[in-house]
Length: 104
Image (cartoon, rainbow, N blue to C red):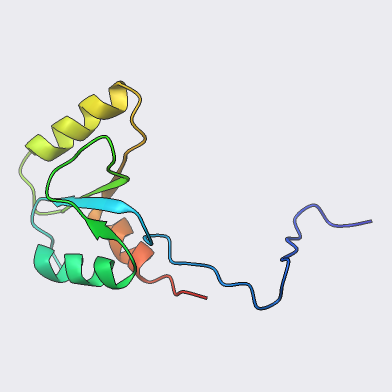
């Protein structure tokens, strides 16, 4: 009997990509650990596509800790989400956690 929590890969050498690979992302608000330019470079190195504005094609909106209130980008993302767009609004600390994933 197989354990239902066991995942079988088709090949032991199967290549998994980084969670940001081919994802369209936007940053809003000042980041506490790095500039947005540096964050964009790091995300691009993981395969992300950097956008300057939120659109219905945006996958992730990363929100910096150093914000005073909701930005126009966050308000736009929330409006698009209410219309059915699949955009995830993610806090800055989770961005660093996602960056820590390695390609395998």
